[in-house]
Image (cartoon, rainbow, N blue to C red; front, side, top):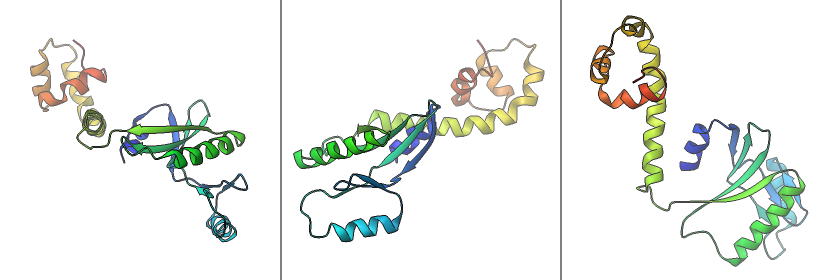
Length: 173
């Protein structure tokens, strides 16, 4: 969930999909349908070792690059066998034009990243609503010289919104 929120907020991300496809590590191909995956599982039922891999995300950037992300919580990155599986996946993905990255995120939800991301996400949601509501009030305030507190009071919002108003350019100091 944390990575989804980051990707939603990143302006350089044009599209992302969770678990977008699977890889057949033995036949080195991308499996895009359930039927392909079922068939690959059937074929590989008797094989030993890693056979299939499903990445956590595929991200399309504004530069049109595509990156496949494997997300791991800190402390749970996997063992040597898993690292070998990821290396196999990386080689296949690069042959198909994808970049590959392993993203290690904090293991707890009370980490600064998780906490600050939640605040940023909330402020982004509130910003849209707030900016729509204050456009008419801004015309009246434009000529007046007010303190930040007075401007927030005139806009009928609390000082909690002051950073959003200043950062978005609605108010200047």
